[in-house]
Length: 267
Image (tube, rainbow, N blue to C red; front, side, top):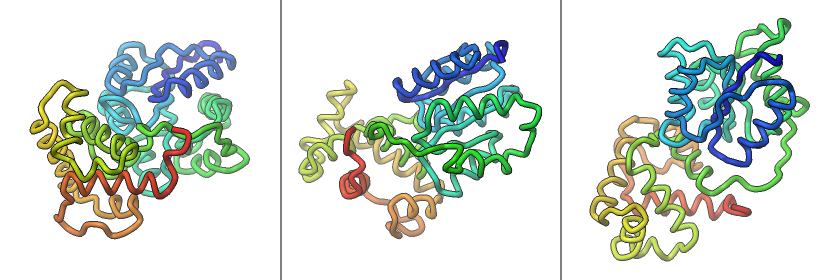
């Protein structure tokens, strides 16, 4: 195993360190560690690792984009994908894009390491679809939560599910707006006077540009016609057909989801 080179693309610094340490302890050479999907894909193309651990939530280019890039460039790195989604649609998309395993977070670094080891074992040459039950089984992947998922990662997971791409400006502005609304729900009643200016100040832009970029991000998601995914995320039939929420409606909807479900604990 010592000659096997591994890339770790993980958005959470603590998780990345745990994965790297576990893989090194198992004799792997971790040649790439980054939280940036675009950087990770470029380095995989250059350094040609044997396998890659890829989180769905990454900067600039998400895990789906990395998988697309691996396939388009004909790169041989075997992919093990980590994500917080258990929806069949998400799992199917990951596998269709070439992943060998999809592991649902939170998952122990040792479990990820074991799956990587299986990729290189002769007895593990099975179709990706057949490997998923083992990857998700309680015995193979104990669900040991050692702390809450960071708020930004929770928001990013929602964006991935409904189709807001991370490379557009509205992605970052929306994420910041939702974070502010979670911390202070009253801010949603003063979107123009408080929310947009606060986001604009952080990113060094104007409130009007923030408003337009957020509106564009929402339009991109709704234009993809992923109504079922949107409804699955929010648990109800929120919007039907081409009807889109306003900026404030969308921000309030996501913030309320996080608050009502208690997902912001330990963020």
